[in-house]
Amino acid sequence: MRKVKFIALIFVIAAASAWAATIRVTAPAAGAVLCKDRTYSITWDSSGVSGPVMVWLMQGRIVAAYLTWSTDNDGRFDYTVAARVPTGEYTMAVISRNDRSVRGESGAFRIDPCTFTPAPPPPMEIAPMIRVFPESADVKVTGIIRVRWTTRGRVPDVVEISIHREPACADHGILLSTANTSAGEKYVYIPLYVTPENYYMRIGEPGSSLFGRSSPLLIGYEYNVVRPTRSSACYRGDSMVVRWGSRTSGGVVDIGIVRASTVASGGRSPDYCLAESTANDGEERVTIPAGLAPGQYRIWVCSQVCPVGIPARGSFSEPFTVSAR
Image (cartoon, rainbow, N blue to C red; front, side, top):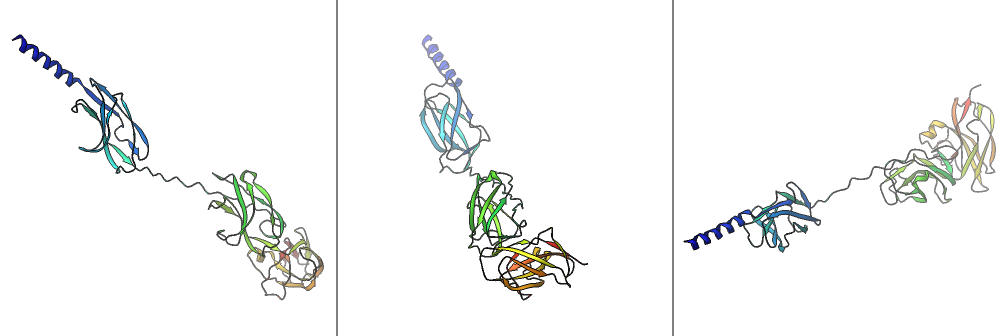
């Protein structure tokens, strides 16, 4: 009788010991997202568990992956999520190797590729501050001009300065220089081979769509008209001296007069011819037509301005005032 009671006591103690063994998975937490190709720590607490444990990735009641068949019961196992693991919801099970009935399982979490698309950088803004001589964003012979810019937002440390025929600056263009963005200005040289044309000054990151541009800039002309100036004034029928510089010597030029508003709108033909085929010696006295309407005008010097009506490319003086008597 005593032997039977002793055996029963041993059975009760063993059963109580097994019943007391527990495992509680603490990570990954319910609702967490595990990204593929990244490493995470699986953690757990245990009580009454002897020997190693197994760690399995579960999808419902199915074992999706046996992460390890045996690891120390020290409460942590590092797991790198393989790229081949299908995207979806999973749980993590930690199981006693000696007694598979003793196990803990996490709440549901998600495995995801986590392919984040970074937000594009804010656009680089170049204020319309391209300053040239004789007048901003208007006319410039080949030579050295001063370029200014301002920026806002995240911009590169170095920018390229180039000129382009297309407003979108999609054409190849002519690279003039590079500059430190923080400088805000630089003197650049317009080569002599630049064809007379409307150009846009582009300042931006090399090989990127991050750039700003100036308003249309007429550059590459052979002549630099230095007189009349903005302070000049004359009456209809008066004579005045026109002075200009030229990058070539000899030859002849035509001199015309055109409304300042015509130039501003992109006009390419003078209102009157003042001198035709005159010597390219840098100075000529001309007469302002008596029938000219009062207003703001510019002198136009070019290799061919006359006769009136022929579109021409040339260099302008600064705007000046023609008045009636």
